[in-house]
Image 1 (tube, rainbow, N blue to C red):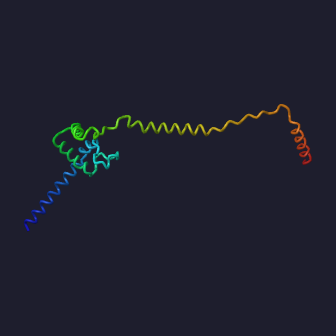
Image 2 (cartoon, rainbow, N blue to C red):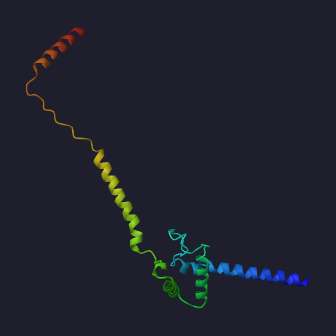
Image 3 (spheres, helix red, strand yellow):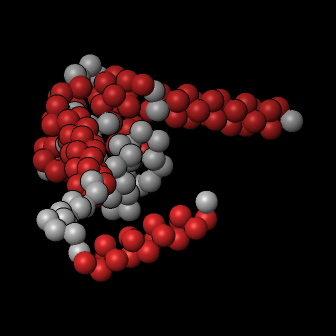
Length: 157
């Protein structure tokens, strides 16, 4: 009975130790470094949101554990990123977005708005009305019909 209690206690303590490590490798400090390192598992390389922040693939979890151990050893964020770049190559490093990355969506939105405004203004203007020249002399047939209308109106009164 005592042996079972000791075994159970050992499993509980081991579980608590693993849970503590899991929370440490998903801490904000580890995520701060991990967002500069792209995942190398191959399945999420096209996912722009996968910055090893919560991934549980074959690369993310060991890499986050390595980051945590390096931070625990006292290495700076830059030196950790440099160590990963040295081990996996320069393609693993993700730089912070610069001003160009922030300006492109807004400039594309402004350009699109200008195109829409130009298009609406261009096709909303009515077509010019052609100028009809009025004949200088009254037409003979028109005068004849006008006289007929005047006579018919005179009979109505």
